[in-house]
Each structure stands twice: as structure tokens, then as C-alpha cells.
Image (tube, rainbow, N blue to C red):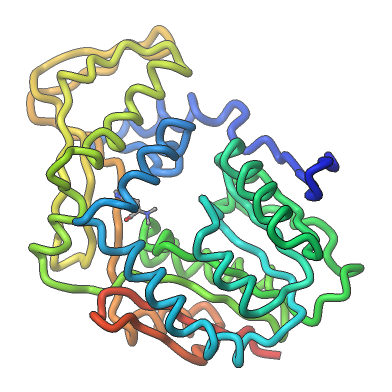
Length: 324
Ligand code: AVI
């Protein structure tokens, strides 16, 4: 584990070594071509996602931050002081700061696949909260991972924080399996605090993923640009366009990249053919009513304790306890 002079330690589990090419080839060889959304987040992708979070149409981030500010006092009553706070997908840590200030954890363990952003966020938080032990872990939290040793830190319990409705990027079956794995990481007596986007009218959802400035389109297309940059592929970005829509029956936004013509792309010496109009499915973003998400949590062996929503009923944050 590398100890940084900035007051945090950094453990690199090398989440991307060798997997990107295999995942891309496997995804583009399926009848419905698909790419895993975790690969959106290279440096450009992180910057584009930051821009998305500030867009007028993308209500999720604003609603969740407003909710956290309004309810964090009540959350603190449930969560108590002195926990080890483990965060999946730490991003820029804006919501985390609100939580850290209110609950006073003894340790903060941000886990993210985006190495550079993880280091920057860990350094900033270590500077802002000098008494907090910050242990950053660069890892793919969608796969089983070994957490650093936390027992010697004097934490009363473990709290896993998973904000931003990133759980919505998993299918419900994947989300249930993920919750069950996270329950194990939190351990008996621990808890999970999870941000979940709520179902709402289709027009608002469609607009959030089809912003007028085309930032979401750029974020989606950056996946192909990343494959070109890192795997030496020859995607012509002007021959693909962004498509996102809400599928009401499935309760999810689907994002695709549509091939605007018949074409072939070479990746690692192999030609991948596209028909005109054929799509690469790049992301799902599921939306859950409060009860539906609580059912999912129960099925994963967790006990829903409390759920907070923002004033406009756009977003929810669930507190789920791990039974003793
Ligand atoms: C990270 N995740 C929760 C975002 C979402 O809303 O599903 C990713 C995103 N995709 C397009 N816009 C934002």
C-alpha cells in the first residue's frame, strides 16, 4: 500500500489490467452488441460526467445534494459516530463531504476504478479532514474485492455509502447480488446508505439523458474514442450517434450508440461489422419506487430502516441495516 505525503494511503488493485480488450471483444461479438458502462470513466469520461452532473436537465445530482443537506442530521441519528465509511464510486466526493461532516467517521475508504480522480478526491478529503484516516482503493467494485484491514482503526461499525444511483446501472438481478456482497463487506451490525433515482414521468427522464448541449452524447461517444485511444481501434465517431430513451415497462433508461451506416471497424486486428441502424447498448439506468427498492434489499438479506426523498420526490436515499 503506498503512503502518500498528503495524508492518505493508496492501494492499487489494478482493476483494468488486461480486461478492457477482452470485455470489448466479448461485448461486440454478441447478437445485441454491448459495452460495460464502467469503461465510460477514463479521464475524459470523468470530466464529461462531471459536466453532466451540472446540466439543467440532469436533475439527479442536484436533487441528491439537496436531499443530503436537508436530511443529513436525521441520517446522523441513525448512522451514529465513529464508523468506518466505505464508499463505492467516490467520484468528486461532494456528497461525501456532507456526510463526513455530519457523522464524524474514524476512517474513509473510497473505492473507485477511475485512478486519477480517486487520488485527487482522497487527497482533498484528507486535507479537509486531517483527523480522518483516508485509505483509497483503486478497484472494480462490481467484482469481489478484498478490503484493506480496518479492524485496528477503532471503528464501531462499517457503513457502505453508494450514492448517485449508480446501483441503477445494474440490472435488478445484478443489483440484488451486489447488495448481498456489500452486506458481507459491511458485516453484522453494519449498514448501507444508497442513493436511488425514483421513477417519474417519461419526458423528464428522456430529457435528463438527451441534454440540449449534447454533453451526454459526448460522454456516450467517448467510449468509442477510448477504445480507439487505448486499443488502437479505428471507430469513426461521426458514423455513430447517441440514442437514449426510457423503457417504461422495464423501468429503465437505455443508452445506445447507433451505427448510421453499414460499416466495419478494426479492433486488435479483427473486423467488427455493423449494419445500418444497428446499435451498441452502452448503459441501463434503472429507476425504482421506494417500495420496489426495499423489496430488492430484503431479498438480499438487508433490513430497510429509513428512506429519505427530496422535496420534489425526484430522488431517494435508503438506509439499509445488516442484521446482527
Ligand atoms: C453514474 N450513473 C448513475 C449515471 C446515470 O444516470 O445512470 C450515468 C449517466 N449516464 C448518462 N448520464 C449519466
